[in-house]
Image (cartoon, rainbow, N blue to C red):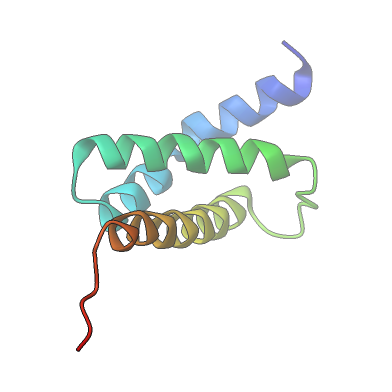
Length: 89
């Protein structure tokens, strides 16, 4: 494991409550909460190299988690709506 990975995991462990809170706020179902939690961690890791440390890690993680949750919620709605047949006159 690289030092960057270790640093990231330590910070995530310290601030995982933020990720858990947003997951619970945006998803009702426990499985969906877990999926969103994993997606947030994944997106945070993908963009961690771009984190410029101009803000606290917790602030950056919160913003990343919020943006990921919004995109995730939109994609969930699209999946649900695509299964609905709309009848017109």
